[in-house]
Image 1 (cartoon, rainbow, N blue to C red):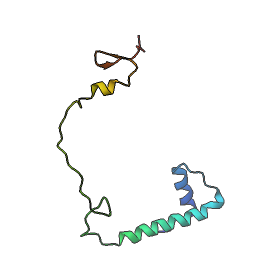
Image 2: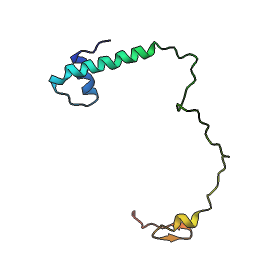
Image 3: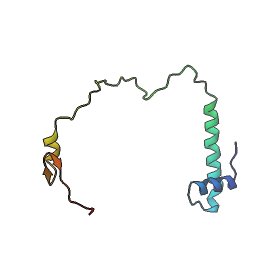
Image 4: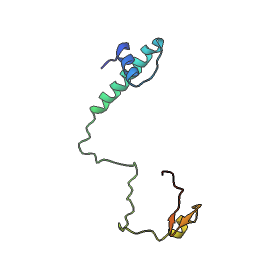
Length: 95
């Protein structure tokens, strides 16, 4: 697929990118080469290839999913400028 200057200008407008008219020809060629490479990638047979998240096989560490409060109330509140009855105290902003 080939991209012309008008299409490159339209894509730039949609992307909110300002491209001078003298550079539109180069941008059109670059977009055409990108689309050509994507078409080339579409020809690759990946039917028997498993999806990967990394090039090296790794297993994620698993832990039990337990809901708790963390038992760190005093540590969390230690950085607060004002606390009351175990909660953050903030000034009233709405009457």
